[in-house]
Length: 271
Image 1 (cartoon, rainbow, N blue to C red):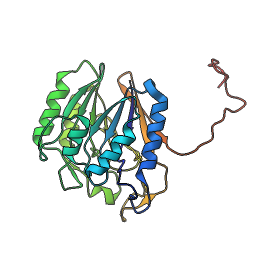
Image 2 (image 1 turned 45 degrees about the vertical axis):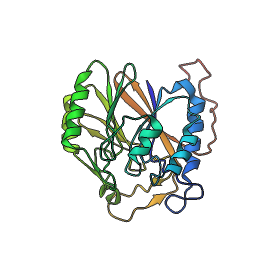
Image 3 (image 1 turned 135 degrees about the vertical axis):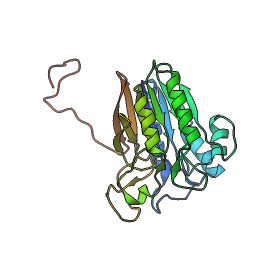
Image 4 (image 1 turned 180 degrees about the horizontal axis):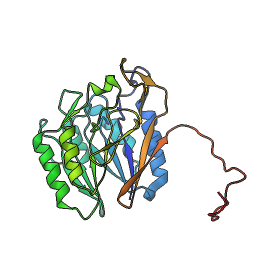
């Protein structure tokens, strides 16, 4: 199973910028081009929240147009910049009101995605209620014969970047305890932090995906919210032997070459 993850796309209306400088559609368009080229080498695309910048219908119109070329199935979870009603309408998610989280299970053959809505309308921080955590425990227990991946917007760990940790997730200790009891959980995939960060949580890998729009500066400690001109990026996860191997794909122009000492195709002993 090969899973692509895009996150924090922050799509705006035409002419509007993110972080005073960035057209967020450029990186997302490049990510889509990559994934179109990969075709059936990728089984599913996870979009882990903050898909648009302000939750406006016109932004979702633009998001839909940008994602339309993808040949893969797209599974979305809400971020704190998203609108639950628009996500429900655009992506065929379960019905409900603005105050009802969009929690759901997506079974993909030999892997189960358990998708949690960590958002609270009008707030940037995240929260998992006791009802949601009970729901998580129940649905992880339903199928222990296949690996499960928990998918959410807010990561279940602190980043060490004070400006982001103000908007952290409440309920992480209980979530970690639940995951620890379910040894078939292969990983927890999230976004929100606008840079790749990994940490062990509940005995498995938790990963915060970089943004297709703009990355935060990786400066630990205090300071204002500061961005860097690191390239937009997405993640590729490969599930092998019930464990995730994760690669970060930077979306920038690069040169490729094969050095003279490298093995020719088919020669496994030359490298």
